[in-house]
Length: 453
Ligand code: PMP
Image (cartoon, protein in one colour):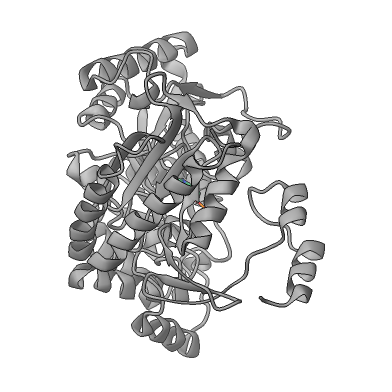
C-alpha cells in the first residue's frame, strides 16, 4: 500500500476534475507512480495495462526516451518563447509546417493552444470574428450534437452536451443549440445507416430553420463522439453533415481532440471520410500527453477573411503559452514516431482489439460493441432484448472500474454502463489480448454481483 499521508494530503487539498468531491473524499485517491509502454504501475507496485492511454492521449505509450530527450534539449536551449510581438521559436514553426502538410485539404493555418478546451474556445472566438469580418455579425448562433463533448471551458462546456457540465453552471448559453446524436444503439429511427443520416440531416435542417438560416454561425461535430460513450456515426454521416453546412454557408468544425493522431487509424479521422472541415481542433495525441498542447487548424478561406477583416488591427486572441517551444519539440518527435511505425502498429492492434471485443458480444451483459481503430466501447445492459441499462443506483461505473483495476486493467467506465477503450497505439498482440481477457473476467464477476443486475 502507498502512504496514507499522500491520500490524506490529496483529500485535503487536491480538487480532481469531473469528480464528485464527496465521493472522492470517501474513496481516496489512487496514485500512479510510473509507466512504460502500455503498462502503468501504481504507488503500491501493482502493474496494470492502460486500456485508456491516460485520458485517450498517451498514443505513443509511456517512457519514450526520444520524447524525453526532445523536451530536455528544448528546455536547455530555449524553455520558453512568446509568440506575441511577432516572435517565434523554431520547433513551433516547424511543427506548424509539418502538420499543415498532413492535414486534409486547405487546413493550412495552425493556432497552438494548451489543450482541447482552449482549442474549442479559440474556434468560437475566431468564428465570431470571421462573421463580423464578413459583415454578418448576426451569424452568432452555434449548433452541436447531443452526447457531444467539446471541452470544459465556459463556452466549450456549453457546446458540450453532457448534463454534468451544465447543471449548476448556468449552461448552455441561449446561443448554443443541439441536435440529437446519431447514437445507433439507442436511436428512435433504428440502426439503419441511411435512416440515421436522414434523421440527423432533418434535425439539422429544422434546427437551422428554427434559429433562422441567416443566424447560424457554425456546426460542431466529433468524427466519433468520445466522452458521450464512443458513438460511431454511420459511414457517410460526417460527409452528409459537412455538405449540408457548405450548402448553407455554415462553418463546419471537426473536433478531433480524441480522434486525431492515429486514434482511429490515420493521422486524422476526417481524412478517411474524405471530409475537409473549415476548422479542426486537436490536442491529446499531438504531444501524446507528455506535455500539454492543442492545435486549431484553420482553412485558407477563413484565415484570409479574418486577416483581411482585421487589416492592421491586432486580433486580440492569445495565450502566454501559445506555440510553446517545449510542447512543439515534443510534438515534432511524436509525429516522427507516428510515421515510423506507430500508426501502422495502431491499425494492426486496432483490428485485433475490435475482434477481441466482438468476441464478448455473446456475454449476457454486453448489449453493443462498437469502435474504429484503437477507439472502442462496449455497452452493458441487464436485458439485451429491451436494451435496459445497468441500474444507476448501483453505481456500476465505479464498481466495474474498481473490478477491472483489481484485474490489472485500466478502462473508462462511463456512468451509464459503457466501457471505453483507447489503448496506446504501441500495444502488442499480447497486450491487446490481455485487455480483452481482463474485460471478460471483469464482466463475469459483474454478472455475479446481485447489486448490478
Ligand atoms: N474536445 C473533445 C472531443 C474532447 O474529447 C476533449 C477532451 N476529452 C476536449 C475537447 C477538451 O480537451 P482538454 O481536456 O484537453 O481541454
